[in-house]
Image (tube, rainbow, N blue to C red):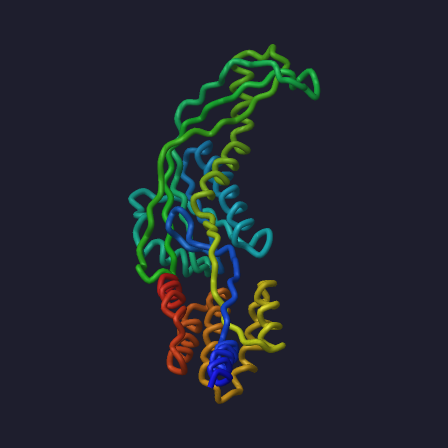
Length: 310
């Protein structure tokens, strides 16, 4: 009788060890930008407007170039992946109108279009020259900072956004061209040099504006399920290396079983992999299959994450 009492707990332990275990994977997940627009995986174009003000038109062009360059670094597949277009502004044109932006989408063949309206420039002032710490030459031994105030408006339209609305951005700031000299320049000469440096400053403004449209990254933890066998461990190794496609191939092969618990765990893991790869619709479908075979405790948390992305 005592022997039976000892054997029963041992048998229960063996039964438990045959069930699934959880493995935590730490990942950095991409989230929409501070501006609330998600540009990941989308074809982007930038259109800027020109009017009769040559200085404003030049400023707009360089600002658009800096903005597009920064978006290429964040989202593009290489130089030139974010196309830039120039358009003449017409009197009475409604450039914040949805139809206008939609037509630009069609013309540019993009998923998302940014339209930079004509900028309004203020009066530039140049600070007094101060000596630099380590000048490369006599002509650059003094430096001045110029200040060019401007007001700008920008609109965006995302063809893949379910809300199908035009988003408006804008505000006032100042560009700061840098002027180097030997300290003997007149105010007129300093002003001319500041004007010549304005394109570079406008380019920097475009890069600065792009910061609001870059992805936000958050550190998150996700659970995967596994069993004590070589294939399950191999899939975990691939997941740890963020080889989600490789891991998914193994989990798909592990579906060849009549064990509903094992099949549910494999389906759940496939749903996680689809989520990591950005296919949220497919992730939801695999999670449905997992729930049908055997509802796992961690299923609800994953479904909330999937629904938040769709």
